[in-house]
Length: 618
Image (cartoon, rainbow, N blue to C red):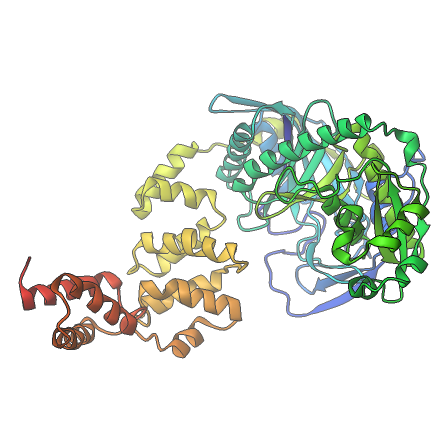
């Protein structure tokens, strides 16, 4: 397996790249406006395939613009200002850090992006360093390029008519660091990604927090097409994505062999979309009737694909699923394919009529969508291209990483025709003095971990986890604000509780962290209640204080807890509970009353003390 990385990381600057807006401000009001982006041919007369695919969806884009975090530049109603000098300086420093050759002149280019994340339909990007290297722990990887560019808009939601983007992130200075391809396994890929990511964090030049660093992973097996996987935001995803893609692409190599063994070639895909509405209107299937709902039933023959749509060599990876994802991008609910048609109650005479109309043999399959108009035909034409590409192994495409490390189809991979010169920004000259003086001096990863562990009196492993996480700044601020709470407790909330909640789809925030620690600090709740209170607060979007009152979790004193233990012990003795079982019985009954109101360790100690006092030691 060959792999390469494109690491995108936000610079921690006070202003955006091409305007004076501060992305760290809080907007007091917002306005919405809409755009419909179009694509044109490049200077070479070519149209980028990824751009053509996005435009084919026919989506309308809505933008949310704030009064402090964005301006007319982000709205594409005003030319870009001169590039941020602080960002230029940081880009040169990072180029020196990776021993790259720094360019003499920085020229910004326009890179076509028509998914809606940029109001202009392109992203401004400039090469600063070339042919660098990264060496860490015996692992060497070439750094192909270091580019300075503007970050894209932040996706807020997807609607039926199109996506909604917030412009608060658009224009934040971003470095894109692209590695040369290396050959190896997923473990090596994880080490490379971790090493580069850690090195960048230690510079102190970059923003911290979820979404500030994103890694695109390029993967290929054998000599087949390169698959670009986007949206790998966490280090632990890297190895999972690489392992998944290696297995998925290996299956596509096998799929190609199966098609050739079935005698399928390029000419077999000269098939036409067939309208089968009349056939399916005669069906008694309630599912089909619901799917049609006034739409046409459009079908396409899939030569040689019988039994191949539903085959799942890797969990969550099926050709049918990829085709469904493609159709969803055009606004359709998905597809119906021949391997699952019986699930919809289509069989017998109706199914025979479908086979006859599509001229399907025993080895063939078909796909079916319910829709109308040009978009429906466009969708099936793209699906046909995807099926034809299966003849040649894994196709070059762009996919999106999921939380658990699988990947889903996003769009075709962009080509070289997406780049052209930016005419609104002057060339920036890079002097020899700038190249020589813009450098970084920093401690090693191990030294930094040791410093954190020593300063905050936490284990080395915890210090490393905090440094790897997006929450180190939250931790340091919380330790200073709540000095009576052990730093290990604060670290546990951030590294364990937050992570557990995140897996359940609940996004932690700094405000919730400080609210829960404040409640512990004031004695309103015990440490044992933190997880449950945070979960309820985040899941129901209510304050920590409201949860505490609702649950009646106001903390109790040790004396109050001691009286509860004594009362329950007295009742338990009168029940003649066996000596060897009495600890478990009393502990369970006491915790039922005091859980979340006092430290469980104190309860354990008091229960044992009173039992020993009553019965003596065994």
